[in-house]
Image (cartoon, rainbow, N blue to C red; front, side):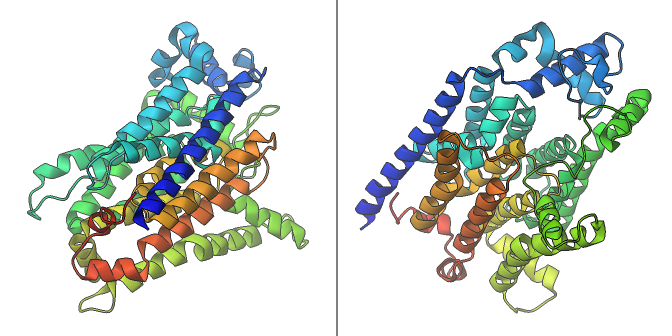
Amino acid sequence: MVGKWNVWLACLIALVALLVLGNLANDAALDVRYGWDVRVNCAAVNAHADGLDPYFVRNLKGTKLSYPYLPVTLDAFRPLCASGFLVSYHRGVYVLLAVLCGLLLPGLGRRRSLRDVGLKVLCALGGFVGFEWVWASGNFAILGGVLTAAALALLLRPAAPVAHDDRNDLPRIAGAALLGLVMSFKLVFCPVLAALYFLPLPRRRKLVLIMVASFGFVLPILVSVVFYPELFSSWLLAIRGGIPDQHSVQLEEANPSLLLLAQSVVDRIGLAGSKPIVFAVYTLAATALVLAPLGWSMLRAIGNGQGSLPARLDRWLIDHPHAAMRVSVLAIYGLYLCSPRLKEYAFFELAIYAAVLIVELPAAALAAVLTIGVAVPTLVSITGNTIEGGFAQIAVALACFWVMLLAQFAPSALVVRAAGVEPAQRLRTEGF
């Protein structure tokens, strides 16, 4: 039976890989001028270098879109836009960076194998067709993906055997700071940092990591306020829609998020324009679809032992370090999924988190995630159908979240952990 699963899964992975590569090759062959976001970003960098305010679209050459990032990024991105190489060849560069993401991602205690690396790269390139949107638009979410992969590689390290030994935390501290920095690119994703509490560490060390991550998140904002005060004021105007007759970044613009899904539901029942009701439905949806299932699964896992709930949670996480690291990534994935502004290209970073979890899934769950999260969206794209303006991406991402959550907290997995054996060890006996 194990041999049959191996052959079947190998065929499925090969088929999905062919679909993903075929989809990207099909996009590359289209006679379309891609890369509008990279042109906007580099036009803003060049405008700033020329002494112009880059948050006014009239100062950006060849575009009608606005620059969304903090002022400090204008100097940070300058080497990327020098000589115009990235604008001209961003598609080749982005493919290499996406592959790099898969190579950087950690193995959560497992020895790295070609099979695991291949699955991570496949998920990064094809998960939820997020990379396709990054590739087409030239969005700098590709940089966020690389930095996220590096941050996870630093954070998800084996815990120090001695609880008070902080020397082993230096890589994690760097990873936490890096993750906070990534979240500062798009401020709405900052709640993701709370998921660091699920790391298998004593509470004090986890709180230190959250504080470091929060500092990494706030630092670019502080630098922008102190060293770029005039540009920071323009940035605030731009993201609030205070600059007339130009594109602005708003929560209400079309994106496949739970907030916009709630807006659509409220509009259909005839209550359009009622923001309190929209946010109430959005909160209910995020709780019912993501937060409550995750919380309930954790409560079932830690049981009703002695001590307070936080103490039991901390003890369970330390006693099950591999499971705790998977839960941390799953919590990051869930919180990211709940973001009120989840653009199509943001699903690339979501695929990075999924890529960490996919390699240790049982065979059936792995097949389900590959089919739902990679193959189906890719097939939709290959057939020429667009998912822009709909909720297909968030639907498949939610389905994959439930599959990974069920696999993580399945009764059989909990029994194995209660016996003192991690699923990572058990998976080595289950074949492919």
